[in-house]
Length: 191
Image (tube, rainbow, N blue to C red; front, side, top):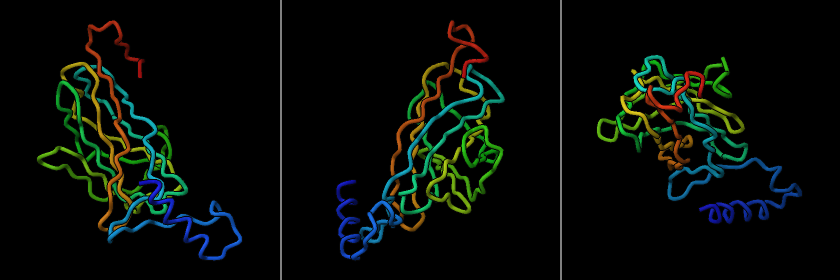
């Protein structure tokens, strides 16, 4: 796909007769058969939790993404879906937040609808306004409580550019480790 996108951008630069290098020209979104794609998709930087032991009531799960300068389109929405884990994590969608920068940032980003698909249980977070290229964004999800069983919990993260219809780019899995209270690895300070 990247080779295809690169082949689209290079002829446009050459055809324009510009004397500037292609790195100086702002990236434009790619549309193929009416669907909008990122030129360079966002990157999943990190997934973490504030509480990593079973049944914790006050945990927050953070998912941090970088939207590159060359994305071509702003980040409109993100889906997060639990793909693996010994227990199902249930989230309080009304407490979902997003921050400009890392998880320690106090600058909130506006959110639109935050919904959950009944069948897949995937959570969709809409940004209002969309996140501009060149930004880092952190999504904070609040589980009602941590799962009952320790283990590795994997959450698939997919990013969608602004535009309809938009192609969702799978960014990878955010990994959250939850420990049993009797585990030798348990530590309330281990994050």
